[in-house]
Amino acid sequence: MRNDVWLVILGMAAATYLTRAPMFLALARRPLPPRVRLWLRLVPLAVLPALAVPLVLVRDGRLALGWTNPALWGAAVVFVLAARRVNLLASVAIAVAVVALLRALA
Amino acid sequence: MTQGLAPGARPPCAGTVREGFVASLALVPSVFVYGTVFGGLAVQAGLSVAHVLGMTLLVFAGASQFVAVPMLATGAPAVAIVVTTYVINMRHYLMAATLAPSFGGFRRAWLAVIAHVINDESFAVAVARSRPPDAWIYLGSALAIFAAFTGGVVVGVSLGGLVERPERYGLDFAFPAVFLSLVAVQLRRRADWLVAIGAAILATALVLVLPGNWHIVLTGLVVSAVAAWTLPLDDADTAPAGAP
Image 1 (tube, rainbow over the protein chains, first blue to last red):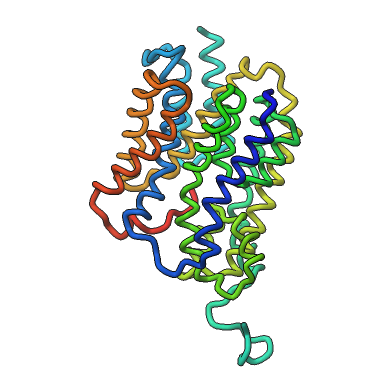
Image 2: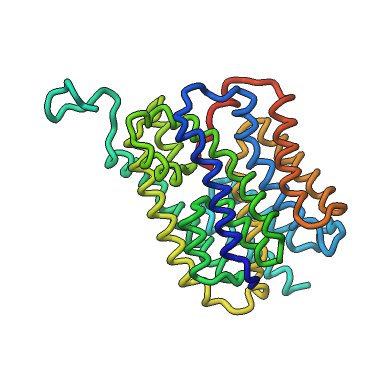
């Protein structure tokens, strides 16, 4: 593992505290404007797919949209299970098993 | 705070730490499992037990911790990891602003500590019980959630070292799987779907042309902002987010 892990963790801690403390300590009494509230609510819904989908669809710098891509099947499985409120551990474990199985068969 | 009230009486709408704790027990198993999965995968990815526990205590924000681990493991620049963490956790501004007025009677030193344990689940519990949320209910819930998550991580790091050669079992896929399940449980309104699908398409296009991990932050900020300032506003859309 790289040697700057503690530095990264401290940076993450500072960045996260910066999202929690300022408005809390200011005891802000006025609510944020509606569009800002909507934006802050939507940010994680944009970040998480931006992170996950390329990990599934892109292999070695090119699109892997074919049905022989095991990750595509794993993604479909975990998405459907989680949307049906199957718990996190079970959804992820089943999807991981599907990917491992398809890789073994390939 | 209770001046003028009969001994033993509570001011109207005031909850207790115990009430908040008990109200959060239904969420404890899933938060614990979430912590266990994180601890296990982080150790698998090559982080030391001290790193995993240190991150959990100092950052205490599950989604961003999950995101940081594969970035650390694949050698992403420190700045990219910290900026990505910030963007994922920007939602705390919304929660902090909603909670703040309920904490008017607290000392600043305590506020500085309490701020650190702002989390989605406790926010959802406190807001579901009363508007404005009750400070003591919120604190009781934060106590339960903090204990559940860190406890889960401790169990996870002890289990995580058991598996050798994780890629053989498809465990590298666990990270995208966790991210996708976090998205799936949050998709409720039309705006949510539009943002998630738009982000998936833009990020996939950007990752083919941009170096490093910048497609994540860029897509996260741009797609959510475009949606927030172009979609019609209805009251439901601007309600503070509940727990995923």
